Length: 351
View 1 (cartoon, rainbow, N blue to C red):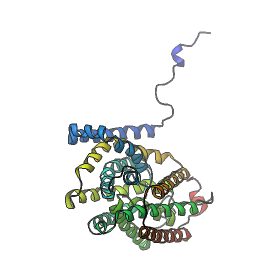
View 2: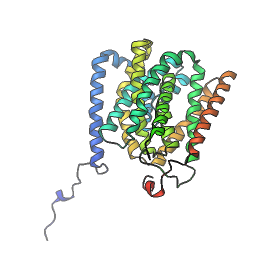
View 3: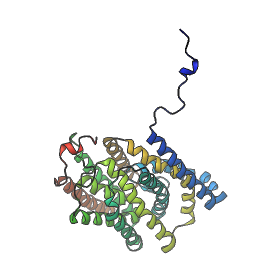
View 4: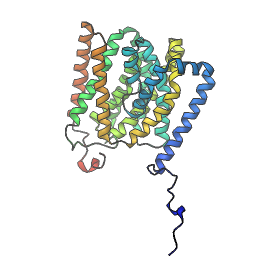
């Protein structure tokens, strides 16, 4: 019997753990990143490289922020805003403007990845929640944000996400909780709810640089019982629809996009060009329960950092308590609605 050729035993050079779809996703995201890097260099030149080096803390923050923004319903601003205002002592309005600016790049790239790779989303909500979010973010930036004290802005966002966390805990307390893969039905009531959620989320985004995604996620998951794996990429696209016009309003209308924030933006662009799409792809590969656990961890981190690092006055504490009461009551009410709970067979394979 002849010996087999040694070449028979040479392993394939093709990565064994990656499917064809995963390789396609990596190639597509690499193309997006390269195009953004080229635009970054052309637009910023040597100044862009200088800011990348000198503002390395900003870039490091957005390594995590872009993954969170592309892969969860929290948005990159949910990392940037608290880190900037609590640890780096950047003014809240600068942190908000940066969040809108950088999410326009990072979550915009993630949204392209989601749409082009056909990651499942609830597409009808893009019209009925997305367009009102544009109106809301413009209205909030021009007429609401100037009236709200910075400390109220910081604490109110914490209260919003904490109320969502509590509702998620309630909703996931049993292993048999069912989920829809899309809106169970789509009548006038559902359209009105999405329009209201989109407008409110746009106003919240105008205040802190993120929030449209959190409000939409709250309604889609708690009320309509949409699977977190579907709701999360949907809210990434919705946040992109709100954050780009919000960014443009500050640049061309309000004209308060300061040189310092421009430097932060230039430092973070090459990072989020990779992290945003990568986060979206990772989310599509995660189980819905793992997504929930990641969200709860981020929410707990936000709450702890606020309690430790933000000095809260009595008036801010009262407003925060009132906001928690309102948000918590709405979240609890949505978890009590049984109208949209699917039959067990419809969602048995979604976990």
